[in-house]
Amino acid sequence: MTRPAMTDNLRGSMLMMGSMAAFSFNDATIKFLALGLPTFQIVFLRGIGAMLLIAFLAHVTGALRRPIPRADMPLVIGRSIAEVVSFYPFVLALTHMPLANVTAILQVLPLTITAASAIFFGERVGWRRWMAIAVGFVGVLLVVRPGGADFDGWSLVALSAMLTITARDLITRRLSPDVPSLKVAIFTATGVMLLGLALTLFEDWGPVDARRGGLVLAAATFIFFGYLFSIMAMRVGEVAAVTPFRYTALVWGLMLGWAVFDEWPKPLTLIGATLIAGTGLYTLWREGGTAPAPRPAGPPAIPDRPSGSPGTGTARPTDVPQP
Image (cartoon, rainbow, N blue to C red; front, side, top):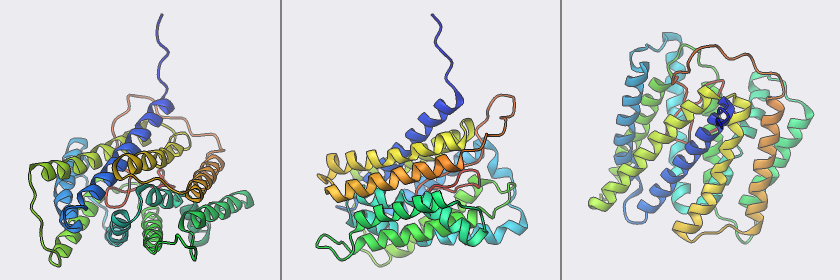
């Protein structure tokens, strides 16, 4: 009996789940390393490894040889600045908050990008999606719980990261299709690495033994595979079918937070995360309601279209909404 062929959407969904797992393990590794090493020393060392691996991927795919159009260069620079600005509060929140809480807050990005696109770009958003956005922000309030006894000011730091990531992706939507995304990612990785280097001047460096060095290398490797899988996912599958699987990051955030840091979110946090994921999925379903364009014939090749968490990549216009 012959096995049924795996469809592009199924393959893309599996790759997206692999990407979210890799990014989640990267976040958990940084959070764990920060228990014994200065945070920005970790960012700098991991940035070196990540930049080299991303540059290698860009070389293999041919993106390194493709120039950035002159008209797009200000947008590329602006996007890199937005990425660096967003990464700073992100890594601070990551090292001071439960992993699942940070993950849940960042999952509202599809909603913020949809709302911001309507406000700044005049994109049409119907009342159903505005209702979904409103419900999603109720979910955020349940996670953050401002004014409550359990309120943690670091939640506001995570929210500021979410806002600057939204600005990053709005800039990204203005890039022309001729911009090689992996080359943009090299700009981004370099900017984050230099941020880490600059901020290490205000920290005392800690000793990096073989165990810690191995974990730094693991974090860079997790980013690389998350990056690679997300590129492949957006290539082989339809965006509307593949993107919802980014919400598996919530599951990884819960499991890693519990297994590594003995963290388990409170019931209101879980309810809020469910609202965020549910309304985000609904928004993606509404955006994917139109019939997709026919896929071009021929064997798929790995393109130059990454996506990821702060400091790890870039989203192309066909990739949003996502962090």
